[in-house]
Image (cartoon, rainbow, N blue to C red; front, side):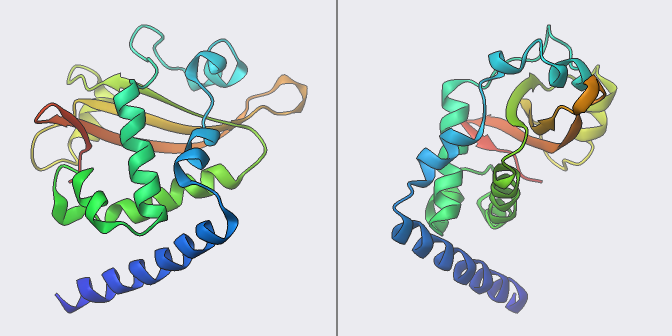
Amino acid sequence: MAKLRIGTSLYSLLFFASSSLYAQSGVDPETEFDSIFLPLERIEGTVCAQYHNWNPETVRPLFRDQLALFRRAYAAASLADDDTLRTVVTDSANYLDMYGFISNLRQLASNEVGVKYMFQESYDESIEQHRALGQNFQTAKPDVIVGIFWCQPTQGGGAPRFTGGYAYLRVVDGEWKFHTR
């Protein structure tokens, strides 16, 4: 329990400093979030989409309420708003994980070269990769898997550079939440 308190204090201190920087710079975290990602429609047909090798029949842009969830979590972590972070996850005991997740998004956003985009796929037990990802969950499986990626096309038309990861979302009481393990 002491370890959790130390971790909570450290997160609070780090993100209090971060929120102070936002207040001084006048940057609204929700506006910042909206400036990070290109709409999926602008990625389709590009070299990034070609090398990503996604299934165009199952991949789709995030819904408006899913984007709102990401935006709310981004703003809450940026402003060290623990109360809001507890409301965006399926298990409120795991809300501190959102600080690391948002920090990773912020690092992805800080790279000004390349494009950043998100897409979703419904979780499907018949897809091997989904089953492998789903094994990480002790409880119910996610409803959707959200891919969050950065892509930089290379000179000469070769394979682009990629980095990124996945978030898992689940509908709880009619609302999208980040599905925690």
